[in-house]
Length: 470
Image 1 (tube, rainbow, N blue to C red):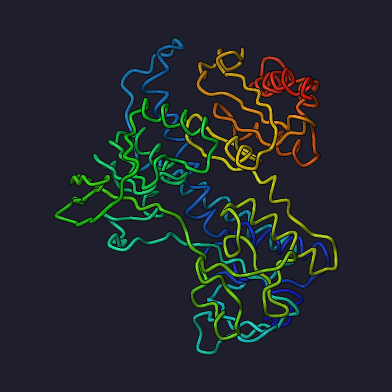
Image 2: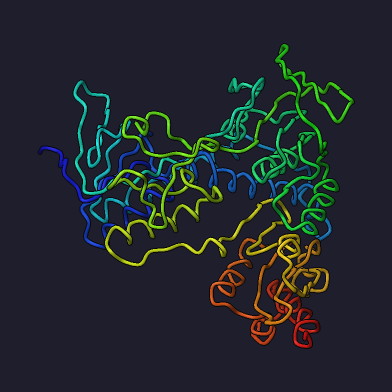
C-alpha cells in the first residue's frame, strides 16, 4: 500500500507541542501527519528532558529519605545502598512507556507518523529523508514547525559527551561523580544538581549572575538558595568559567569572580546555561522564514503564523518560556486558528515549576515586577511550618506567598516554595485565569489537613491589607 503524501496539516516534531497539536487537528477533522527524526516519539521532554529528569528526581529523593530520614519515622532499614544501574533502568522504562503511549495516541486518532529528517521544500511542501534513496515529499495546506530546542554551548566549554556534558548526558552517568561542577544556576542545573547531590556527589553550581534561579520572586529565590546549601550544594555566584580543560579523567576549571581567579577540579562538568531553538536543517533560510537575529527564534504573529503563508511555529521555536506545557497550549491554539477558531494562549498565566525539594512553583508577577510597574499591592504569606499536614509529613520548609492588587484585590501572582508546590500551583493558575481576588481564595473551603490550606491562609493574610486599602 502506497504511503499517503497529501495532508491538511504536516507537523514537524513530535514533542509536547507537536503531538498535542496533531491530536487537536485530528479532532477538528484535519488529515494530519507528524514527522519525527528520532526513532521514538515525544521529543526532548519525554526522551531527554522533563520525564527522565523527574524520574531521577523522585528516585533520588526516595534514596535520600531511606538513607537520612526514615529513622525519625520509626522505620529501620539497615544499611541503605545505591543500585544506580537499576535506578537508570527504571528511568528508561518510564520514558519507553510514555513514548509508546504517544505512539498509541497518534495512531488512535488516525494520524500518520513518519520517521525521517524533514526539510521545508516550499510553502505547502515538506521533504522527508527516511533513509531510503528517494526522499518522500509531503504536501499540505498548512505546516507546523515544532522541533523544540537543544542545549546551548558556551565558547571554550565544548561538549565532549563524557566529561564536559549537557543535560542529556547528565541523565545517564554510569557512576556517581565524586565532584560535579554545574555551569548555570537555572532550573535545569538545580534539578540535576539535586539528583546527584542526593546520590553522593559534591555539587558546585557556578552562576554568572549574583543569584541562582534569577527569574524567581526574590524572597522565594533566597529561601531556595538557603535550603539547597543546607542540603549540601555549593554555589559560586557572580562567577564565570574562564577555561575548562579535560586532563586525564577530570576537568580542570578556571573560575573568575571579579578580579580573583581560582582553579577547581571536577569529575564531570555539566554546562546548563540555557537552550536555543532547534532550527538547523529545517530550510528556513531558503524560504525566507523570518527569525530574530539575536535569539534565533522564529517570528510569529498572534495566530502563530510565520512570515511565509501556510507555515506556523510553536514551542521553543518562538518567543516565551521554554516549557513543555507552553508548547502544548500553543500547539492547540495554532491548530484552532488554522481551523478558523479563536485559539489563544494567556501568557500571563503560564506556571513555572522547579522540581528541587522543596519544589518551587509560581504564576503571575513577582513582587519585584509589581514594584517596578508601580502597581499598588498587598502581600500575604503563610509558612508550611504552620500547616498540619506539612507537620505530619515532616516537610515544614517554605511558604506560600500571594500578591494582590492593593485597590481591587485581584490576584497578581502566587509563589510557592514547599512540598507539592508543583500540584498546588494549578489552583492559582485557575484563579488568575478567572480574575479571582485574594478574598475568593480566602473564602473557598480547603480540605483539612492539606498543603493547600497554606494557600488559603496566605490569602486570608492578604485581606488584612487589601480589604481596607483606599
